[in-house]
Image (cartoon, rainbow, N blue to C red):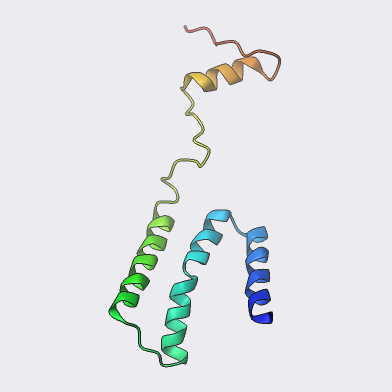
Amino acid sequence: MLSAAGPYSLELAALRRLPPRVVGVLQNLEPVAAGLAGLAVLGEMLSSARWTAVCCITAAAVGAVITQGRAAPAGGSPGPGSPSRRVRSASRGRGTPRPVPRR
């Protein structure tokens, strides 16, 4: 029970202190860390399929970190020139939104 409670409590602490995207990348790297720990500490040999999995997971994590600044927001919020953005800014939270007149 303690072997599961320790990592789980560390993950919850990380969720409170780190952005969700960082926690997601770190959680995806857990199998890689386990495989490498088995190799280094226990002397286990990894098959070619497992090395391929380690490389794929690592490449995905690197890709997620590299594209972090270029990715669109998760909510898909509209850009500054989109019509829905103009409607929301014109309503100011009062009643029915009205479109902004075009100039």
